[in-house]
Length: 468
Image 1 (cartoon, helix red, strand yellow):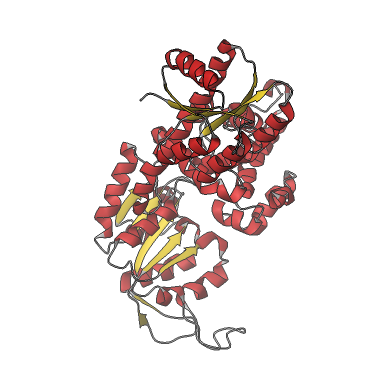
Image 2 (cartoon, one colour; image 1 turned 90 degrees about the vertical axis):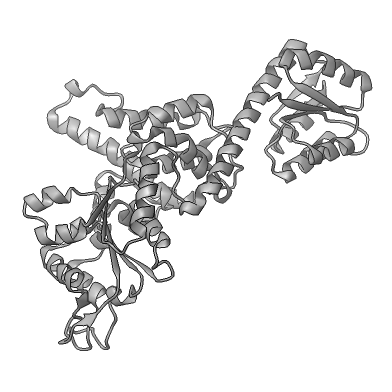
């Protein structure tokens, strides 16, 4: 489609000259308006890719027209024309949201060059909006973004298994979206009007996890001053989601097996079993088959959980979803970070498409948030994430920044790589949780104290992330 440009100037000769010269040079459609009021009416009636407006005009001037355009939130690119000597007002317009300004009298080739750059920005914004709208239509599938064949198979599997009451075991690396998938299964099932209860198994100490799952009777232990219902009962009629199931102890495994097998529980201190009507969905980033063969996970529990296995692909197996995910995260976080949704340059997108993404979707989301935070212009560029991207690439390849591995001892090289990895990985977690260490620990499946020890060892301070 041809780009449409609107030129606004109270000088009729200038309008005629620009229309006649720019249409063939830019291969676009140029429309004109001689007042700010006329221009704004045209903008409300039609979609323009670019507005080129004079600053000083009778009635509504360029600054006020810019303000009105910005209020429409259509992402229209605006360039201001200003007379020589009025640069201060043009700079103010840039601060108010104009993409660029050009001083009169201007060189025609320079103007064409600047307009081509602006139209490229408009193209990226339009593509951003198109992708966002396309994926908003797909958000009825529970906020899971993906058009790749790998994700389409996952969606079809979710629809299929949701119609049953089978126990599901969702596997995949950290950051692949296991909890979202489990919520989608529940939301598509006949139990969707019932509760969805989540248990993050590694974050609950063993001695507490049993009472959390099965409840307890008054007097079962010192602090048990009254009866308490467990999460199995709380999830009655709905779904109980056991996250990172591979981390539970053998003692809890045994009691969990009985609850799943017999569909009944016995609270701590109780003498009678209580029947429960609950669907079990479990998730893990651990190889449970290997854990079973190593004697770390009960064989009978494994087969009870693995009635219907569902593997989520890592991001490196579905790279074609990266542009859509980037767009999704831009629109998700831009407002909370006080920014308009920014387009991503082709150069940055190409770089993102090649990254290893060891942290999968969670790492990509953190990168997008950093891009929104550090972007200096109207578009995210590789320069805005230069240090972050460089560190990620070096960590992924195992090469410490500014260092030759062969110059270091084995111990030093290993420690250097570990520090770089933790700086990036833990930093991404803290970025996502605004410095909340407990929440970051839950996201990566660690105990809070263990994550604090890692942060202390590598000098990672959560305070800067809280201030952001």
